[in-house]
Length: 301
Image 1 (cartoon, rainbow, N blue to C red):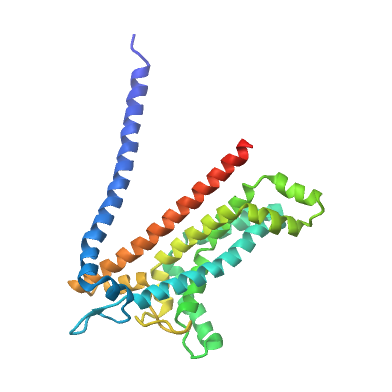
Image 2 (image 1 turned 120 degrees about the vertical axis):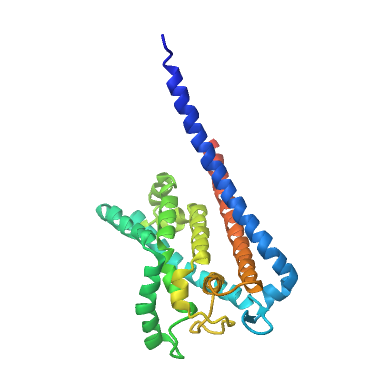
């Protein structure tokens, strides 16, 4: 009589092999990208000089005496990221609070699904919307110098793009807080608004911070939408209404036409972005671990 466990074990071994292959492939892909960036970018940074590359204010890869300074792009990236996250965090957090406690229950799911649809819209569509609607509006009504492109328009577009992340993570974080916190606050005489903003939001701060870190990562790495609304000049930002360039835009705009040392400079720019992403991922992991430890201690009590 044949054993019925043979085919089952064969399937288990096959699935185990598939899972192992996927895990190894993911690790190899990350390793290959890391080795490529470090092998191609670090020697150029060492050749140019760390200070000269990171703190240089001129980017002239096509001149007779090429100069590779990415400090203006670093500053622009930080400005755009900060403003977009502030814009998205304010709007997204209030939206999450509304869905969590103040919105009619029958509307919560449709509204959340509509917000989540934003995450599936291609970046180029956001860029096209920004270029044809936001940039002209800023140029005609808000800009003091008649320039619509720049940090301000980019931060608005990116603020819209990070909304799904902030809303979803913030809402999940608040829903993970025990309902007894809210009911206890009401029992002590707090209003609905006080219980939500003074009790539930602080209790969910770890999850909200994690969502903010994810939003920052999305804003730092965005390319196509930013290129279409930021202008593209590699200059030091002196105004929110000025044609400038981020690190990702710098790589995308020069990747097809540069070669030699100029291409190595773009890869070195990718190393800087890689370090930014690494710092964000480590920060997110630390926040997640801290949240898990707090939940464990609370459960132990």
